[in-house]
Length: 544
Ligand code: ADP
Image (cartoon, rainbow, N blue to C red):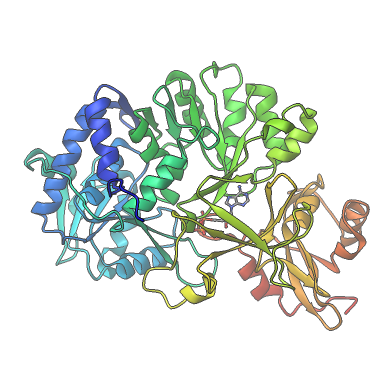
């Protein structure tokens, strides 16, 4: 017997229509070099419909890729809806990718048009000649100084965003197929070329709903949401869509992500929710001293591990600990959040801080499992046993776009291999310990490079440290610590090892320590272990 309920498609136009009808007076504020720009959802909706008309007039194909090279702004939010609601596919280009990666993804996605903020046009212009399918370049004047009169290569037409919008007719939005592609985003890729993830209308709507769960980010109408996390990568963690869906005001930080500017926005715009990566909140906290932060109710944070000390520093100064989330481009991105379960709420602050340092519980809708590398079975929920974290659910990718590397990343039963190594405790909390390719495999046991690095970085003379596995005749691999000493300080291998003695298990002790000038980074600022392995892969360990 079949259910007798309506087969109502979950599309982004539903989110749009709701905001247009119910919340026309709520506002989007954008901080630009020229000052703060305010627009109501009513005005935004009108402009977004006309932007749909612009895409028609430019002759963008029915499912053409519409790329953006843009900060978090109301204009970018217009593109976020106009492209998918007219059946096109929004492709957010990550401003922080290396130039050759931008060329690769523009050509791989076959972008037909790129909308670019003037403040970052200088990064894109030198690459225009390398784009094979781009026919239109639309400049959004956000007050940046770039001189667009330098011209563009033959075959590309240059336009001004506001001029196009002025003369375009508004269009109706009606996407019928919820499984149609809505947007795409490429991973930054620590190895090889970036891989494309394609979100559907359905996956986007369901992920948006998860941002409204009380035990998720809990987005609601009364919020004023400040997404510092970029719209150009990982969908601003769903908050741009969720704010529109619930009719919350949006505070868009624009190009200036300096701690001072963000602290000023939080205070003067009365932000209630502000989401960003740990380095952002490290910088902002001291700037908030003496400011009125009484409106803040939630500080979602993720993208990399949230140090316990950071969360505690927020709790002490602002009265709100940081709220950790974990996810990746392939998971839309939010898959876990660090809500404290009710039976744990009365624990001493020190223990609550340890729970907040974990990545959290899977959101409703997301299934997670941790498989032992040796047995292939799920590890016990003891908070200690490690294995590879895998994910399934309606907003989790099932393959990459046109990429023969897909089979390596998905299991035969369709789960995403996240590439993260994790534990699960008795309450179901996930704790990430490393990336699968970075753990040091010593005699069949795993040593977490991340945990070792954290211990080494606790040394007062250490600026940065990265740990890689180096081959060993007996143990297969042993840890090598690559350490950057703070300027003006001196440190020896023995001092590092003495410091670690008692802090880590004996068999975790690095077999050697090398001193380097800096830890190489990927385009998005994560440690590039690949570069370190290339440099030190053949390093002769003294005990080997
Ligand atoms: P990339 O494009 O580099 O893959 P993602 O934003 O998709 O960028 O990165 C996802 C990865 O970031 C995760 O697999 C995980 O390793 C790391 N990550 C994300 N959130 C957290 C977190 N809260 N704690 C630790 N690591 C995290």
